[in-house]
Amino acid sequence: MRRIALNLLPILTQDFRITVYAVPPFGEDRPEFAGERAVLRHLPDGEEYVPYWTFFEPVDGAKRVDLYPFDNTYATIAALRRAIEEKCRTVLKAGTYRVKENFRRHIEVVVERHKEGVATVSLEPYLLRSTRRFGILLDFRFHPAKGLHGTRRALQLSLALDRNGQPNLDFYADRYAKLSSFIRKYYGKIFPLKLSNDQEVEVGSRLVGLNSDLLARKRYVMNGQRQSKSQFMGVNRFGPYKQHYQDAQLYFLYRRAEHGLSQDLFRALRGDVFRTFSGLKQMFAFPVTRENVRGATISTFEGAEIDRIAQNVLRDANGRPVVPVVITPFSRRDEKSENDAYWRLKHSFLSRGIPIQVVAAETIANRNTLKWSTSGIALQIFAKAGGTPWRVVPTTEQCLIVGVGQAHSVREEGGIKRFFAYSVLTDSTGAFQEIRQLGAAEDEDSYIGSFHANLRQIFEDYADRFSSYVVHSTFSIRGRELDSIAATLSDHREMHGDGHFVSMKFNDRNPFFGFDSGHNSRVPYESTVVPLSRSDYLVWFEGLQYGQLALHKMVGGPLHVRFAYPKDIAKREKRMFLQDAINLSGANWRGFNAKSLPVSVYYAQIIARYLKEFEARGLQQVDVNNIVPWFL
Image 1 (tube, rainbow, N blue to C red):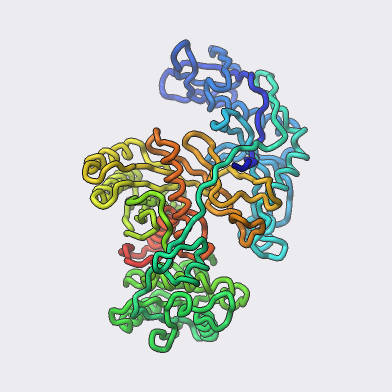
Image 2 (cartoon, rainbow, N blue to C red):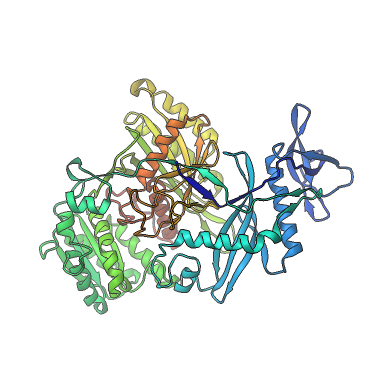
């Protein structure tokens, strides 16, 4: 059991009170007084809690109520937030801090200014329920100036790249240093806090240390059911779990100007160029010869020409599986006009049932980039040709994982134009089952109705094949709909014995971070779990590897995982479902070191994004339930 330093300064004062001024709620209008809008809160009144409109400043006709911190934790957090804002307003110069209203209201202090943007540390009150302590979350972030997002210098200032422009292996240590510097410079200015009733609240100067749990490391199943702790080494040593379609074809497509680059990519995929990749044939038993490789030029990446070449590829394949490898002068991240060409290219081939592999010319032209990209490109080609590179060792047997993702298109004048949601169905080994559309509508009520109806239908269709069912989502699903699904599944329990129905919410853009002070990198071990409450956990889906003190790749931040349904899940069962989620982060075939988010939600997010982009360009709906993972 290791201690993880959470990015939280603890509130040391335990017996403070907060004061609110309460008005009984008459009518539906939300009252406002002296610029403060009332908030409806339930306050203790004898043995019961009664709703009141509440203010933090005195209001004529309102009664004063003094609350203990746990009488209403939302009121306590709001009072602490007001105290931080007031202290910053008092001791800091205008322009050196700002109040942000995103999903959560918080305060940002500007700690560095650069021509590329500003670096900030945010302060946000939080109740750490696992220790029943309030505290102040600190989070470092760099905000690039307009037009400079994604530039090398901006990424360096955000700590994503090191001084040489390479992925920053010291990301955790550098982030810890930024927070430590902030504490040294600003702690004495901002703390202690003074509440609206003039009570002082002391705040600690050291990050809170929490006990962590360590789940099992991901294990991968390769050819012949042999296992490996490494995706790359496992495939290289044993071969992939399942071979590709034996008559699969590769079709290189390029403009004449990129003909030389297409040859460079061909040789790299064949294994003739870099020691870092032995070749498609050697690693995946996928031959790259004149018999199964063809090439053709494309004059321009405009609609008619794209459709013409896609139709030619379909005709030449003559029913055989084919993966076109398209060399483009643009990437998905380029400006709008070239970005449009990327999505239209993808749509044209997908509408004909053909998964394509797009490789930007700049990736091939940069020898060092190509060196480290070739194995990932080969992996995606192999999967799109019908191969299964590996599976993961499951914890829960006969378990269907339903990953849900959504992406909404937005009107230029504001508001949502169209709602999208798709699900990716896998089992707990990462074996792909199918893709289902859950919702696509122009109004929210229709979208929600179809979403829940289609979600229930999935479980009805699979109820005779699995005994346990877990929903992975990045957003909240209404409890009554989950109740309805649970009731549907209960009818099948007698046939399959005891099983589970669980809903888990994943958030990779959360305000939490943690550091392991046991080594200089400060990176927790992979599969580290820190409980934040009975339902909330901070999980490192990637991290330091066992038995190693040196990092070989950049490690991202932890995920915030919430058990949203049901309320009473045993601790042992939570460990099982967390372990399966960690395992599924290793089932990502977008690369050997691809993003460590469970593929259940990651793939669903990608698919929803594709369909949103197609819709935004007025392109016709396509059948996305291809039998190969075209979305890689």
